[in-house]
Amino acid sequence: MSETPAAFVSQGSGAGGGEAPEIGVGMLGYAFMGKAHANAYKTLQYMTWPPPLRPVLMTVAGRDQAAVADAAGRYGFAHSATDWHELVADERISLFDNTGPNNVHADATMAAARSGKHVLCEKPLGRTAEESYQMWECAVRAGVKHMCAFNYRFVPAVRLARSMIDADELGDIYHFRARYLQEWIIDPHFERVWRLDKTVAGSGALGDLGAHIVDLARFLVGEIDAVCGLTRTFIPERPGGEVDVDDAFEATVAFENGAVGTLEASRFCHGRKNALTFEINGSKGSVAFELERLNELQVHLVDSRPGWNAQGFRQVLVTEATHPFLEWWWPHGHIIGWEHTFVHEIHHLLQAIATGDDVRPYGADFEDGYRAAEVCDAILRSSQNGVREQLRYRTM
Ligand SMILES: NC(=O)c1ccc[n+]([C@@H]2O[C@H](COP(=O)([O-])OP(=O)(O)OC[C@H]3O[C@@H](n4cnc5c(N)ncnc54)[C@H](O)[C@@H]3O)[C@@H](O)[C@H]2O)c1
Image (cartoon, rainbow, N blue to C red):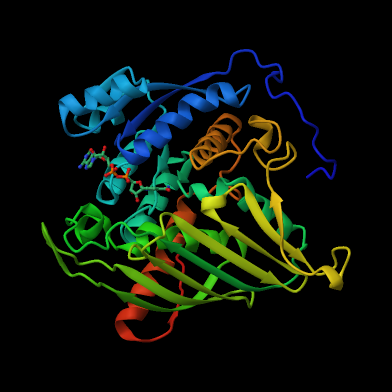
């Protein structure tokens, strides 16, 4: 990363692009994540210039014919389908993007990979480590590019934290402390949506929110070696049926490199909307991050000037043109948002497809999705048996 402060630059001039090759995209699901991904496919075509590939939105799949046709019109897909097999069979589609609920991740994504399509799948990759492993194995055997959509790796401030750790700016890492808190299911009258049904979701706050912070723990600090977990279901019965997943979890984690950490996620925290936070403490300094203030990274370095008489965290506004991803956006101080993480993420995947480069280490591939699932499963097992669980990762 350049040390030069960015000027108040014009972001409108192109790098000299010409025509980017096209790639046909088929997408399963068109609600929350479908909207976020569709927005990214369109936006990256003109904001990142030239794009590595130009996504052509071919077909979107869902279950309800009228609703999915409406979604196709809204998001700019040429066609709609009520059976995802149509996307798998369509040779014009080279990238299959799965934004469906967790129970439709495995079959559709693996079928697409087997038919030679590159695959992007939302997190958690599978509902269990076993299902996630099968998906990883299938994508590797198929020889396609595979990405698990851990989009928080693509927040500029998170990437800055990673580059500071890689450059040894924080020294030896001692602590990783992360929480992911929401409030939206506290009301006991709130119905049992698919996220509260184990058959569909696999787990509750753990797979939905916890998987993100497990991935960030691995991305920023390293592999997790052992966990102690505790899960709780506060409201086991809701309109619509039984809740058989966790409403919240707490875990302590030991990293292979000697660091220790705590992870926590819940959807029962009044006042917390989408409050993903983490802090990392190392021998030379600390960083802290809050998703709801995602343009900022709190930094404290022990050898910074003027030294001990002016101690404390400083707030780094991560919007310089030299900061990760900011070259595509606005002059410094003109902040970006949550939706831009998907632009960065999908750009990264298209770059890997176009160049043949690996999705790793900055993007999460299906091995990362599998490894996060192993950690989540171990937290569940530990909660059930009351014992510290040693991680055993499968290899290929
Ligand atoms: N990366 C993130 O920050 C993030 C955020 C939210 C959700 N997610 C993940 O994205 C996935 C989707 O979550 P969401 O919030 O968009 O869910 P959602 O309920 O808003 O949307 C799910 C979509 O899938 C469709 N669908 C449901 N069942 C289907 C089936 N059997 N066949 C075909 N289509 C089906 C629905 O019609 C809908 O369009 C989940 O795996 C979730 O964990 C990731």
